[in-house]
Amino acid sequence: MSVRMTLTLAAFLLLGALCSLLVGPAALSPGEALAGLMGRGEPDAIAIMQGIRFPRMLGALGVGAGLGASGAALQGFTRNDLAAPGLLGFSACAALGAVIALYFNQSALIVPAALIGATAGASVTAALAWRRIGAGGLILAGIGVGALATALTGLAMNLAPNPWALSELTYWLMGSLDGIDRTALLALLPLTLIGVALLAMSGRGLRALGLGEDVARSMGVDLAKLQALVVVGTALCVGAGVAVAGAIGFVGLFVPHIMRRLTGPDPATLVMRSAVAGSIFLLLTDTGARLLAGPGQPLYLGIVTALIGVPFFLYLAVGRSS
Image 1 (tube, rainbow, N blue to C red):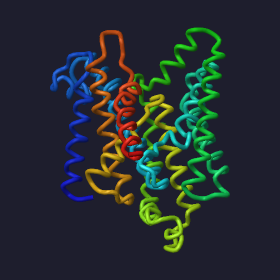
Image 2: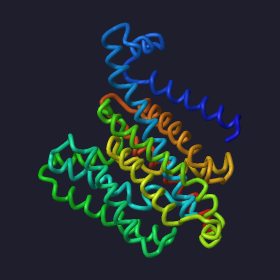
Image 3: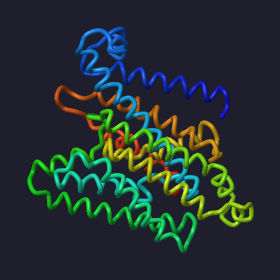
């Protein structure tokens, strides 16, 4: 990564973090916000900054980094610009685990349930694709696992015991950074860090794979090991993100694509660039959603990312078919 690009991404990351900290329903001046963040000033300002805005900012950093890195790694492994974390069913499996916890009114178990769901989905996908190591087998297995998880999620919602349980499931699936606290961050940040590190380790293998599977094998790349790195890293990132923020889609689709256009297609560096860019995007998008939301009427982050991502996806799909 060039020095200029590093400085540019760092500047935008700082800007996004500041926007996330300074924007909110409570009107706090920059001085009051800084004092509250440092544990000084009015008790209300301290509670808002330390209990709401700072955890929310860290949540956006973690979720965005995991989704961005996952998308870049999956696009590199499948050699398909339309690939995204949802392609392999990890998002759907993580959502299924969380929905099951909500269905049984076990809100405290949402995080472990989502992680178990993502891990189970990753294990099943990898097992189904084991006899055909490579992009084709992984995509086919992931589509099937994701479709099954989506159907089971719909079944759980269909069998919801009461309208309030159904509404809770529906709102959670819309995706939001509301309510992220220190407990959620203790699950999100370490798991995302490990996942991004695993995906970054796959960079050299992804670079060789870009020349074709046969060429990659001739260069000494172990495709089974590479697939395992991508699958496990994506499962950790997506599972942790879905566990604390619900279903937030399309970030892993267009962030790597944009970074590829801006900085080049080398998968060895694109994973980390996309991780930083994913954090920037989610910080700014969440800030925009809070600004656009009306009093007592939140605008869910997953809806905003879908409104941005769907037209971009259609643009890419039409461009590839023309």
